[in-house]
Image 1: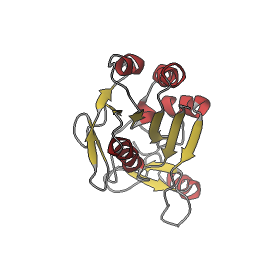
Image 2: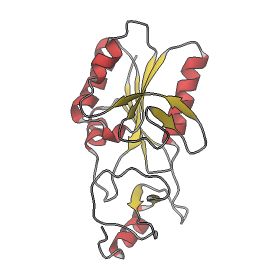
Image 3: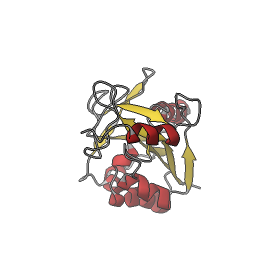
Image 4: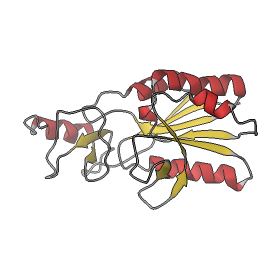
Length: 195
């Protein structure tokens, strides 16, 4: 039975690595997959899902105007699975399109992304996935203190916590630090606001 999955975590938890491993497992068995990634994130190159450990794969880029259901159903070849990286950037409508693929076409959809932004607020795509996904699974990451990291602290070029700014700012280890809630709140409280 096909399901809509949401694998979520803080930054640097291995979400893209896990996605690429799942894709490899399907392909190794001769099954066809379709990969999507957010057009806004070009850190590994346009249309490339890249992991911090050096794995990568080409993917179809999506933005707010992309009809994911139409993209997948335009190709008549049998499809074993759809995998979506950076799922926090999906719109509510796009999450509903993915659910429709599961329900009507019986294609499993595996989404990987952040649950919350740098202020602890849900991204729209993540909120919808948390609401309607058949399976939710947290991928664990670790704070500097050894506790589970659940929050994404945005930092400036000097490593100081930022408490203001746009919800979306693409970056990696130079821009974000995964922390437990206690240390996230302490860092924000000591930030003085920041830009």
